[in-house]
Length: 69
Image (cartoon, rainbow, N blue to C red; front, side, top):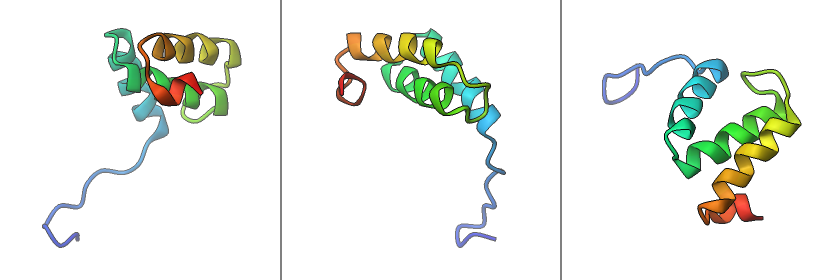
């Protein structure tokens, strides 16, 4: 058990992708960037480089520095 008494939750890449997708669809640039990374690496979702580029471009269009690299 953690010092604060909380055990947290088990890590799930698929759950992370689901939450990133919800936030990304609402226009959150950070979530769009994270979703793009997951799509490009196949973490929690099937690899889809083309879709990853689309999400990264959306994040870059919002001036997110990490997405503009």
